[in-house]
Image (tube, rainbow, N blue to C red; front, side):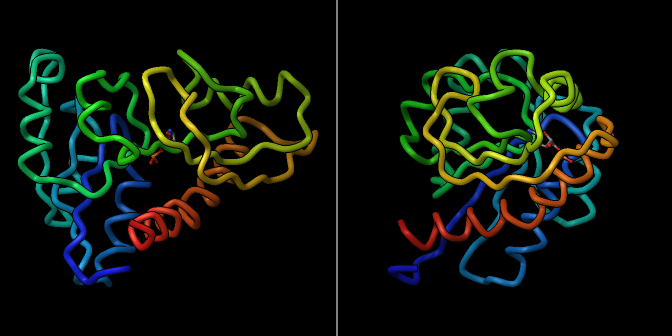
Amino acid sequence: MKNKTLKRIILFASGSGSNVQNIIEYFSAFDRITTDLVLTNNKKAGVLDRAKSLNVPFYVFNKEEYLDDSLLNKLQSIKPDLIILAGFLLKIPKSIITAFPDKIINIHPALLPKHGGKGMYGDRVHQSVIDSGDIETGITIHYVNENYDEGSIIFQRAVEVSKADTVESIANKVHQLEHKHYPEVVHQLLKDQ
Ligand code: GRF
């Protein structure tokens, strides 16, 4: 890090949250980087149990808060250095994107620009890889802009797909890549700020 000031991260997820947990655990070893908040739109999301057991503040927001300025105000009061999406399914409102230029990143479970866009999440992505007969898939970490999966790419890593692979086996391989690289890429971005 260029200076030793405190760095704050905020995480968004809609589902299980294994990436969120992994990122929180990775940064627990760094006392100048704090996970200030886990946000979700889904009150049943597994990520909430993970945040609770890791003692990280969390908040479930509703549609109104998301679309008016309430959530934006909450984010601005924390002044995050990075906002990290990990399995977050809603489109980020323009007001939030504008307020945090180059500070919102996402991970996509395939090699963008292939297998991305609206409706391409979870198993649908891996099924699309199988249906296309691709011989590799992987992960893409990218900045978030107003269109699904179209922001500039920060990092990609590929993994082989064989004829024997299923949606489940591809999902496992991709998760392994995500868990290895997402915290490292976040860390590098924070160091470069
Ligand atoms: C990951 O595969 C991520 O790439 C995608 O959603 C999945 C979330 O997994 N955007 P988890 O909830 O972190 O386990």
